[in-house]
Length: 323
Picture 1 (cartoon, rainbow, N blue to C red):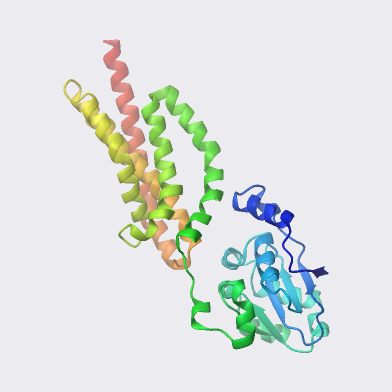
Picture 2: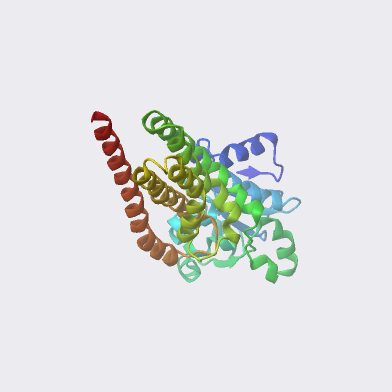
């Protein structure tokens, strides 16, 4: 198969749809061996995922270069996530080398893989089973031309997670959250009123939009703990409004509703914040597992306690009205 380094309007539109999570599993290309330019038996072989954004980033960075691109079947998942799931891994790499008869296509035995795929690939197993040596290129595809000339420089091995990268992860989660959020907001509006509905929206947006923006500025290390803090700040205006709205005549119900906001909203924000552990390389699999086992029960108890309190307050109100 052949490809070029040209990124068309159609490609860019596909990227936009992928960023916003539209038909997420369909942004893929056919796995296999692609020729870029006019490769020969001594041409370098680059390995990537069959996710369109990964493939397009690689081929666009190799403009004017003759190369082979070996595309693994990662089920339309990017390199980093696929490495964690195992689809960008030793088995698929060895399988693809065999299927494409790569040993007969090139004279050398060198494969250049993206560094973020390292967690899924065992280089010594690949060499033992295929004869090909794995070499890890730079973090960013755009650094490949410099890498090919001068090798890996220190800055090529470092991953940034600045504001631009953090903003890029918002759209997919936001699109997935909107339908259930609207449903919950409408139900809460008719059951409990506008305040409860707005609280659900605020807790969700705090976890999906505000959290990645404020991530570096929130204290504590665990994402869940950061989420609880941010959720607490989001819940505070609702809690204060509930407390002071009927402070003089209904102090106990006021405290109850304030406490309900403080229990439910931070739990929702923390749960959503936890999902961002998969968006940055400064978290680890073992660390995320520890965080899940440590904080998810707290989220469940907090949210469950808040819901029970709401039910109790509703029941109290109904009984009071009946009298």
